[in-house]
Image (cartoon, rainbow, N blue to C red; front, side, top):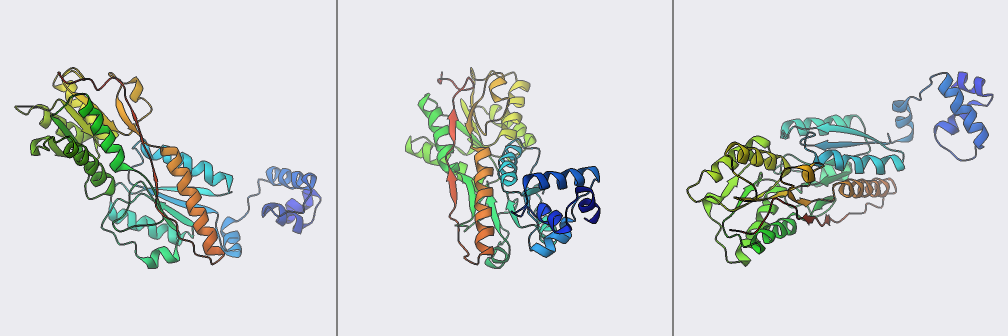
Length: 333
């Protein structure tokens, strides 16, 4: 800092004010200090700064599968909003492993991040009041059992209901579902929406048409093969996430079954190339970017309330999804 001050022709106090973004320094002096920092390749010691100020301006984010296209778009919403408020993002991948998730949480605590955005891989983990009270956490995408606050999710029940109703409106009666992990809220809520639509239409939910996947491509392939090799296969399939849909479509190709001529397909999750798929996929489109942005805004409100000792609780924010009807669904024959 002495070197920066000497090169910029200002006091050390002025350099400190510029680094800490305090008001009272003229634009000309601020530019001089930043130019000197650049020329000297000087970077403030953020660890020391965080100890002095009591915050790091860093947010941790834990997702269960960074390769799933849903999460990078959520992360983009988080990062754009974080940047506006001067925060940086530390991204962690739990690989759907509860033990690894707990390790990552401990690591983020020790790194003194200001808060955490968490898409949990373990619905049975107890995030008790003690953890939430001492550390700001907002849940995204997946809602832990009993959680009634501090979360931003999609209205999965309504979205799955709308997807199933679409197939019913096309005259389909033999409608199968490839469900995700029903121990997670995303899995159980989408099944609930499917059941509701089927029951309202007085259609049977046949055991052979109910397949349990685990949100992976491999499970989508296996479930697709099992369904279409049935003696009386379904005429329509609702797949509960994008990766399982990719597996399902691969299984249809392997079996030489035309979609939608022989079977209509609706996928939960819209992804960048869904409209370029053959056929173009009918999908449930979540507000992924908005989920990330709203989750970051909620976390910042919690952080600020705890700084001010007002301790505001935040209700669960549930965003609607939209059904995008394309070419993979058609009227039942």
